[in-house]
Length: 566
Image 1 (cartoon, rainbow, N blue to C red):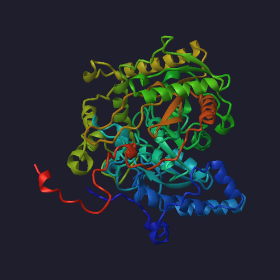
Image 2 (cartoon, helix red, strand yellow; image 1 turned 45 degrees about the vertical axis):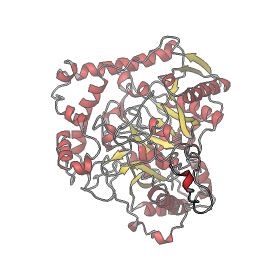
Image 3 (cartoon, rainbow, N blue to C red; image 1 turned 60 degrees about the vertical axis):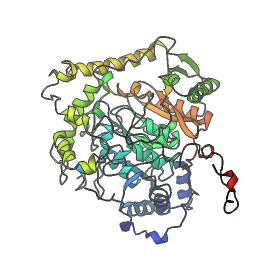
Image 4 (cartoon, rainbow, N blue to C red; image 1 turned 180 degrees about the vertical axis):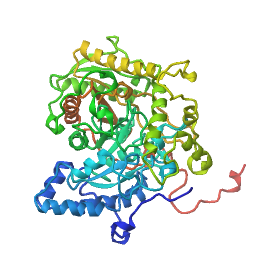
């Protein structure tokens, strides 16, 4: 099972000998608007842009810092770029992503020559039979699908000692700011690729934190959309009640433009959620959706806003992180927002008792439905029981660092009926667990309404922790669950850096409030300009760890005289 990662450079007609010894950087931090302007003026082609990113991937992701964010490159990428250039010459520009390289997390199906494995060899073999809906929308928008990115295997839902950013097939991805720090997960590779300027934008997925957490620790923007706004059809699932696909980008504008391309403005028969609303909004119809989210960008977006602030455990962090959060809130206030202290007002967000059961039940049912769409892979047509057996049979490749305790629990989950009592959860049923999640969403709505808020704002999470495959992840605090459990939207924006590591804030609202959140997030972005390029530092603050030199600078040492011997 020790197979090399599939990096299809040979078929890209781009021999390594033609690449420069140093990664190019002249297009680093370029926005979608800037890239489109250059292509419209004939100063840049999609082929040139695609080659630019491919060269950076070789020099930075595979060599140099060896970030290991990619799990596979698309052998058809240059062909897609060539088509995009030909269309542009004939006056056809399909949208903001036309000719733009985009990467996808390796749990998003592409009906081409690339694998879709969720990082597991259990899904490696024959590629998916058709595009996911979001991949099809990228193609229809003229985007160049550059490749697939590494992730936390099975979206970080296999074992209790799992390390983010590691998968059996993809190995370990590094944080581009400080290489021995974790890039978080599960959309690790997508976030790193965007932050390190290895792609223009990327798609990731989130069930609870898997977009916004890696976005924060890699210093970029993420839009975690309302459940049902983007289709999950053709995406390796975890939970149909909470899963979503969302964009990762270096600016709010680029994330908003990407969301405009991938959203489902009408019903997608492959994902029932696109017909309606998240679980907290049962019985209501979905509002009409805008076709262009960039219209809500506003550099003065915080002026007149009313924001409910909750600290969500940040006070348990380092004083420097607390200070960064306080400074972010002060910036919002200085930019014209009214701050409502939700903690002082007694508002709280208690995690529902059945939250874990909901994910377990959904995963067992949804995984089997997805496996039925695959052929030519070890668990095609199977269940999580087959994945568990596969991992046991190939433990050297799949379980060198941690086990599969969650898969073990899945064995006892009874999915015969949503009203079946679950013995490991004191007889709680799935429907009761869903009611708890719906009540959580209703509580968020109540807090928003009672305080007349435009959004709830919280620190996204703590700084990136040191990667440790033995002691595993070190999550100290985070706020993603406030939006995730009810299926609500969340926009993460860089706020500052602490010890050279990014720190960010999250703007969260009720279902389909993406326009409001984008306005607020773009206003905060304009007020802070906190995005910085990663430094690829080998370790945290290396200049302060070397100590005092003990040896003289001249050659050799004088032999001590006998009287100095002891």
